[in-house]
Length: 458
Ligand SMILES: [Zn+2]
Image: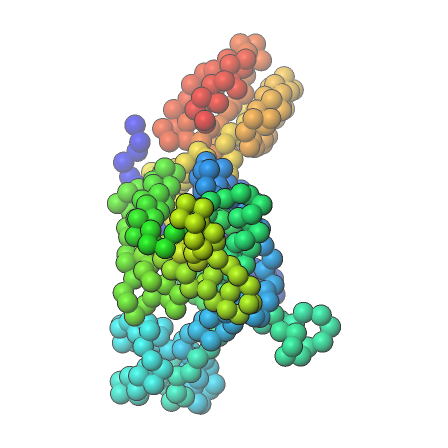
């Protein structure tokens, strides 16, 4: 029986403080006062994050015949970003306070103050709207400048000379090097349309005002797959990938009622997209995007062909003709997905906080506790069990002497099973196995332990 008193996290602040306390996510550079928009993953967080990425890679690459992976660099050639449209279009509207010089993202400001959505609105109209509604600086009530474009890419220089010729950008998305490597990948992996190239990696956006914990950060991670198709097959594969991706979240335990599709309106489509849909998760404070599915048409390959002068077309054996493949992109934010998994699994019960994470995602699968740290027979057996089990599962060992507290700590990070070696164990050659969800305990023979857990954790 699952206890009935169940509460979830209510605010982003509550989520951030839970993540910090349980060792999932810490603010970066905290001893120096922090740096807005940067977070580090702690001991539990890195495990959960790695498990999410591994589950994605398995579903998207290893389980498929038509998708392969790459791992590309993050400091990227400026020409590539010109071709992709990012140098001119990867921007947010920015306004300055004429008085205190504070900078604001104009669309965010309109949303916060006027509660209206101006995505895609031309800059002069945003400026006019702010003036008409007399929107003032949130710090000093000063007047704003006209709205102007602000590029979100982090700029750097390659080599020792800081000149315009040596400019490079940290990638704001992982997709572009998949397009640039398209031919090499296709040739070397002997792929035929339709096929996909997947990548997991970091991306950087110099947000004007990072906020909301991991939801809008300056350094983050993406799990992306670009699916190359024959022109005209767009609709079919767009629908197919929508289904596949929803299935993935459900297979890892996210509740169905907490997921939905949200199609993009015409005016919010990115410059490269013909059609786009978000997969949104129902966070306690509202629906939020965790993944995007985009029909990018042949925009990227065409642009890179044009700018590089290299032929990026594909010879279709079936039709004996050259085509520029179209692309369906599926792109999930690792960090936001991470939060969705944590929130979906989180519950406060009468005497504990428990994360009912899918066992594949749980940072620790099995914890081993000797009931006494003084009794040598008990600790010796517990260590032997730990040594055997850690060959098969990610395990945790602790001699704390307070078993109740140890169970609580494991519940809080979602450990599916706790094994306790007690005073009867050395003689009877058995231990108790406690189930995280039900808190029920069962005695299991030491010799049968690995098999028993394998069955439950498979
Ligand atoms: Zn001001």
